[in-house]
Image 1 (tube, helix red, strand yellow):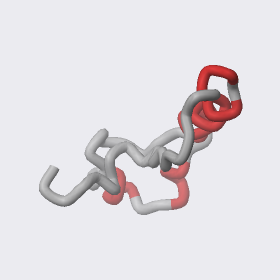
Image 2 (cartoon, one colour; image 1 turned 60 degrees about the horizontal axis):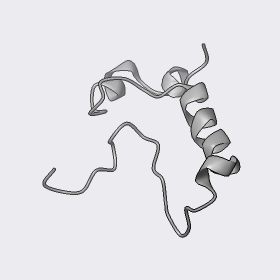
Image 3 (cartoon, one colour; image 1 turned 45 degrees about the vertical axis):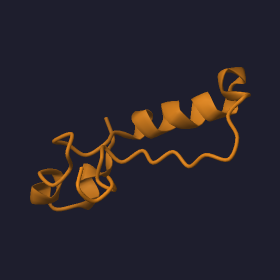
Image 4 (cartoon, helix red, strand yellow; image 1 turned 90 degrees about the vertical axis):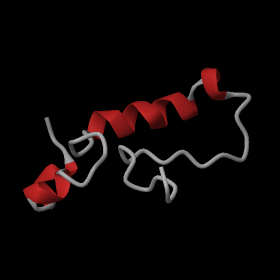
Length: 59
């Protein structure tokens, strides 16, 4: 499985709240959802697929 992990230093993965770097298929599934009929009522949202790296301060 490909992942962004190969592009970063291994210790960076430790800073991700989920404890690992995301896999390409995880991002792909998010994109597939947004392109599907299942997301037809979603408007004006920003989905961050990053394992919690960009979480709000204090959380």
